[in-house]
Length: 119
Image 1 (cartoon, helix red, strand yellow):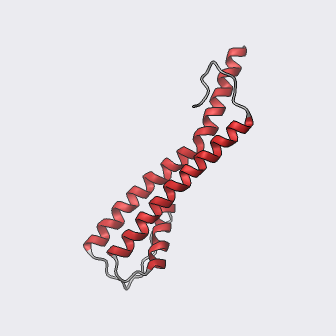
Image 2 (cartoon, helix red, strand yellow):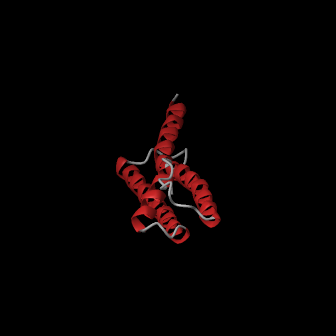
Image 3 (cartoon, helix red, strand yellow):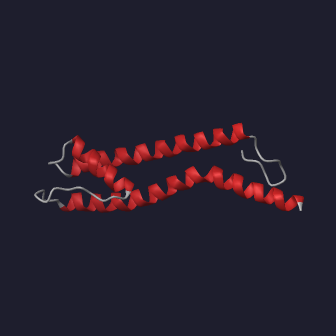
């Protein structure tokens, strides 16, 4: 799919298409991760409505931390879900950043390699 080291640098139109495709994949992954969190919070914490579940899932997924009312007593099931979702979110977030950066890094290193061949 991507050009090898012996091929010329891809035109900007193809490069921008790769960035767009990777951004779509990243948005899909983050949407699925958010959906998992929203449904998980809704099912494990009965006091949460859908908005509270969305808020907490979004905050965990972005790395900001949960927003849970101090008056809500969490069940063991809710604590386990929140812990697993937090670990999962950290990995998903970092992986998604990698997907977004991949075309930029590929182009940068390919261009460096082409410059080395010229010298």
